[in-house]
Picture 1 (cartoon, protein in one colour):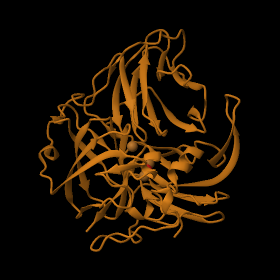
Picture 2: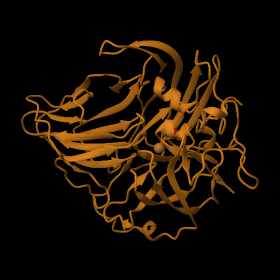
Picture 3: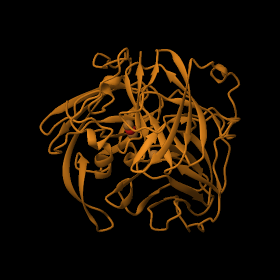
Picture 4: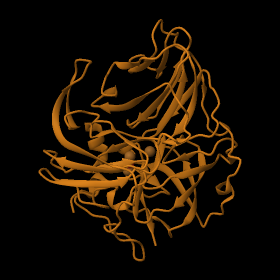
Length: 429
Ligand code: C2O
Ligand code: CU
């Protein structure tokens, strides 16, 4: 096998599960669907890109661009993607961030498959089960390959008849850092969404950088309608709120344009690319907004059996740092014992950030529901995530639905932290 992704030090290695736990997921394949099949081809290659800032970067691209093409499918489609590697010497894979796929399609080099070497190919197949905003990236030496540009957006549109919030228009806002340039849909300048006064635009924000990004929406009121692809229940209108999107996370905003003039979505730094919506004069940059918190946002579901679900197992994960490594419970990968589960169980996991920066903690192949933060239970909409942003001192309790047997990685999505040890496994017994 080529390349164990998780620590740079373990290149060439291959994951061995402890005795009594699942050892591979080779036999797990995509489920049945009545939906059509959508096929895509992604070819990884080196390419010198000239950015619209004038800068030149030696990038690693899919189909010649970074980000690679946006893959758009419909809920229930069978998605078939052939990955080819032209000339990335270490090999590449594709990981479908946030989408529930069979373990054999999860794309983790050294765990679920070998990295695809130059001249080779691998075909992924899965059913796009839940509509939402997702993304893909190489999971071979991810901390290097993501920075080089091997990533793109994956949007699963709802079936026409499903009840997601209607918008007059929608746009993707995919943030990444290539070399040292922060790019928005590949541009160092940003873009405009054409829309009329009073219209509502769904903006799908993906943070594919390694740092937390903060956004204000100037000149308009907005809702947070989905997090990590999962709709929130009865979201309320916000004004002047600052939304912090952790590395790997997605936030879908519904922005109501003012009757006259533009709305602007921007980060605190004036040099960062921004999104303008509509036409006319730009609003002032708002100062000192209140941080958005999902703790009491939206409303609870009228019927919500999962809320009272009894966990089958409890775990504690303390994310921290010691001298040169990032740690979970004081150890770093491969020394961290895996979480284990039997299919159908619910795991209550307490995740705390004990320092070393923000830790956006990501789980593969599963979602979890946030139960509480710092001892305070969520009072609003259920919040279902695949990546949990934690700041120093935060303690969250989440409930993981162990409903997808196999071998799965969990790691900080600051990929530097992940490669410096903050990575572990969830295995099935
Ligand atoms: Cu988006 Cu294991 O990562
Ligand atoms: Cu981290």
